Picture 1: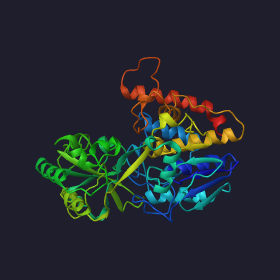
Picture 2: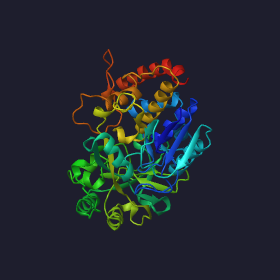
Picture 3: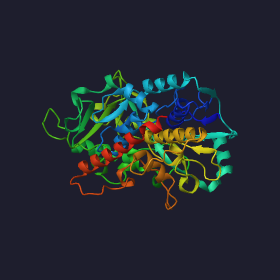
Picture 4: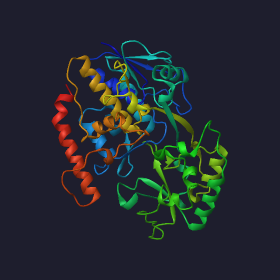
Length: 435
């Protein structure tokens, strides 16, 4: 009854934990530290390769609902995220290394989980969960291609933002604060006037990019778009995106600046900050040159430059059922970003569902069948929806959750009611899920 889980990222760690908590022995295969990818820098499990933010923690936001569902149902990833959170206004951000270290310790100390290091180059027999992530090694990707058919694997490009040291930010030209005063002044706000923004935009749109084999702007995932790609869409695009100043009152003027670059704490000590929304694949010297044009970052010390990598995902509606199982071989399941769920929390949610449902099947229990009215269920049903012809990765959103049966005035109130409906269902299912 042993289950092999391939990959100890967010999805694989969550899946292994849910199986182990239900008494199922797990062999967790993880190629780090023997082999790494361009996006990984540590030997920890559940390493966050891009932002340290798990996005909104508000129930009026779909990802906030998904987090709350997972919290109530005993998610390892959410428990560790809550324990290592750093202030980020209405978002759940974590100490990057503290979070991954905690997940790693919990997984390694579980008596039902055996961690086996090294690259997996062949799919093992028996029950298998492939959670090797969007940066699956070439050898395993080739084997999956043979199993699934080469035309069933798609890809897009993903990018990470630079990190700077806190003490290198010129606070005479910046201030602490959160948009509309939410939270506890958690962001460093770096303003620009119109002339400074114009010069920055010109430099950004003409800067040299690093070579990424096969890169095309059209293949960039919208939710993690390089800032230079966004800038090329028009002079004002950034002003309505990561550089919007709405709700950020400059204490020196009492007004919103023309543009604002926000820095978010990346560790609990507050010694490292990331440039919010500044995912990039510019060459490293160009990143220093262009991003140092932001007045408060004129002498910034860059602790990590932005990087870009290819993310691979499956044509899941053709391949997977609502439990993320391979239709042609139900002993094999997939979890995480490679299934087409996009985002840290969504990846954890897919691993959670696979772990719960695989354990129930092996224990001879009926599936839970999370309904579409829940965020967990809506994701699984989206990924496995055979009517989708042009499948693309997607973050959780209220658009894939059925509407209310009555009219509610105002988007926030409507979303809050959708969340309350979902959480009522989760509470009714909770005892069954935790069996």
